[in-house]
Image 1 (spheres, helix red, strand yellow):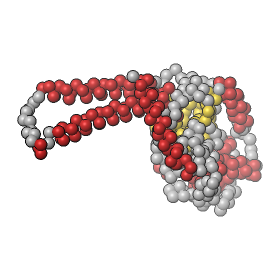
Image 2 (tube, rainbow, N blue to C red):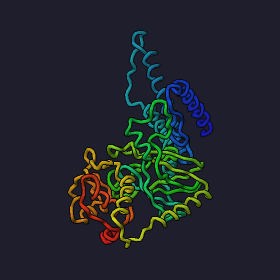
Image 3 (cartoon, rainbow, N blue to C red):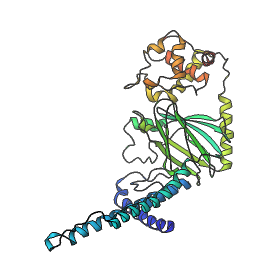
Image 4 (cartoon, helix red, strand yellow):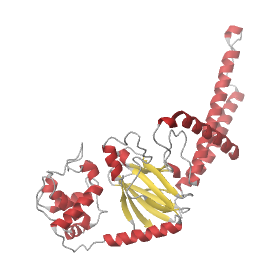
Length: 394
């Protein structure tokens, strides 16, 4: 039966894709993004995992059953209304409590529900089985980027922030791609994609440090909520090498559309090379927390940290936007007690939309604090050293 449905759905998919392409492709200056959305896409994303493939089959299976039931029920109803209408002399039947009818309308729906429930249950159980993972990664949602930490398996200890590519943010701020400019990955390109090996079971643990987000990659058949204070998990096993895209699927604030997901699936050999390179980068970033920096050095570094992590909310001019508090002239930033701003950076202020930034190194936090305390109209002359942050963490 499954093979019959596969042939039928394949025909329907091909027909819908042809119709969409023939009618609309010429009118758009974009083309399909491999691993991402397609132009005038009318169907689920092509599956690259067994779970996504089963979901697609289940989708069409349910649609076909519902269509058959719909046609059968309304065909009988309209036939009965027309065939037995009063105008041709039919008299209404007068009967009550027909045991035969009651048995039929109980057994038939029961059989239909069982036919739908069995394959659906099988798929749901498979989606929830996160045991025996080859690699475990924590995905932390924050306004408006993702933090990834490799917790178990090859690459353990690697961690980074994945945010919208700065060039695409600038493009969006200027009204989007220019006329005739083709940008297939518009608002989907990130600075640091999540890298995983092919044909390995990847467990994704989701959480958030501000509001509810959702980690979703259609090609994998994965969508899992990331809720502050809760830990949820999902998994996937990509069967193809390539780049696959998704987005936060939970409305999470004014820059919800600037929170893409990019998963790069590579061979086992390339993954090992990537892990080695990342380990080298991490070692290079491990600054001596006892080092005393000059004001010029740490301010320059702070400018880079601010551009990579803070400018999305507080803007390059430090003015903030909407509910986001400005840093220029902020009482917290100007306070002579460094501990006030430091506490906000380490612990966040969820009620004000400010996430915690504990994942940054002591040097990066000290640098961005020094930068904000001495930039724009903030001329405090205060210098924050990594040792100050180290002490505050204890």
